[in-house]
Amino acid sequence: MADKYPSYTYVFHEFDVDESYLYNEAFISFVSKHEKKLRLFYRDSLLRGKEILPTMQGLLVEDGVSDLFIYLSMVESGFSTDAVSPKKAVGLWQFMPATAKEYNLTVYHGYDERCDTVSATSAAINYLNRLYKEFGKWYLSAMAYNCGEGCVSRAIKRAGTDDLSVLMNEDLKYLPRETRQYMKKILLLAMIGENETLDFGNGTDEKLENALIEVNVAAGISLQKIATLLKMKEEKLLSLNKSFKDGRVPQGRTTYKITIPIEKVYAFYLRYQLQDKKKVFRSHMVSHTVALGETVESIAKLYDVDTEEIITSNHLKNDFLVLDSLLVIPVNKKTFDKIIK
Image (cartoon, helix red, strand yellow):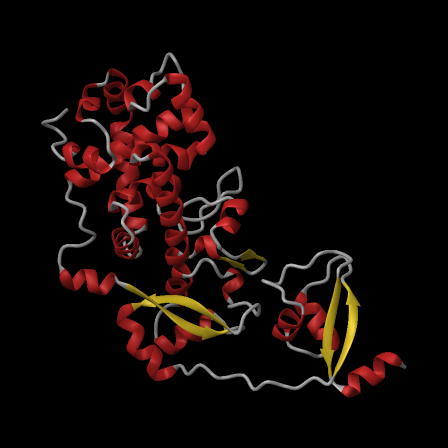
């Protein structure tokens, strides 16, 4: 297998795996059974993610994580930015809601930052760096990413070692089968990819053409309007910004970041101007108890105010509301007088 995959030395080094693992019987058997299928999966994933891979690779390298961890994302999602697992994990890096919250990814109606390439990759990097700090080896970090820190810690304690060959033993089963398969997939896909010299393009011009950049846009704007301004297909822009549901930037903040091709950045700043919202002074306040089915938008419409005013006045982090909670609504005198009557 060393002749077939000369890249294994680099791959194993990046994941802190001893080179002797190449001759592990269980790994050899896995490669023999799954090689053909994973080659097809690799090519499909590469085609799907060709536009976002340079960005992911740059973020990984910049923050001290090997760019070979893109293969972890490949196993997790096949580079589909809005992939959803049966367990409701979402995005390139398959974050569950609780983990997303822990790493400051915003998830609420109309906006899911787990589907944003930059935000999700940055969160994954922070998570992987934390796991590496805890376990000291990258293959342990990858396995903990799959089954959790507690699972890997218990496996090491039971095995009496953190040696990969021992932890992956098919008979002793220190780790769940899913995690054992997961680690083998990552290693094999990395060997396949690095063997084909995965450089995300054939030259500088193509890399530049596929490069992406983030820009700020106002809340509430439709991606269709932005696409029209940039003279690009709406479907293309939507595919780069799957964190925004229904093709529209939500109202939860003043501005949001969207991803556009770097070749369109000049057109963006030439044709799009971010308007500063004029602040409206509201002289009166009324209370409102959240009823079933109500949203920040519906309440704002009821009192003729902006959603941002409600969010700011109540120190809300997003537009998620708790049933029967009490909100303070800033209103003008006319609305106030109407309510008290």
